[in-house]
Length: 127
Image (cartoon, rainbow, N blue to C red):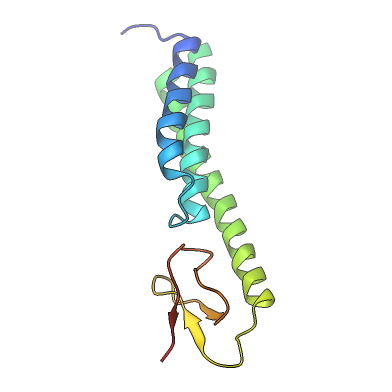
C-alpha cells in the first residue's frame, strides 16, 4: 500500500469541501441538520486522516473522524434548526385572516410569510 502524505490528505479534504460544500451547503431546501452533518463529516474525516497518518492508520482515522464529525455536526445543526423554528413561531403570530402552512414539514405561519424558513419552499394557504 502506498504511503499517503499529510499534504495529500489536506488537499483531498479541501477539494471535497469545495466540490461538495459549494453545491450542497448553501441551499435553503436542506435542513441545518443535514448541512451540519455533511460539514462535520468532511472536517472530521480530514482531521482523522491527519491524526491517523501520524500513527500509520490514516484509513481508520478518516473513518472514525468522519463518523464522529457527522454525528456532532448533525446534532449541532438540529439544535440550531429547532431554535430557529421556535423563534419563528414566537415572532410570527398567525395573522388575523388566513393561516399558511409548509407543504413539506406542515409548520404553520402567518399570512405575511411567503417562504418556509426551514425548507425554503413557498407556503400555501390552509383551507
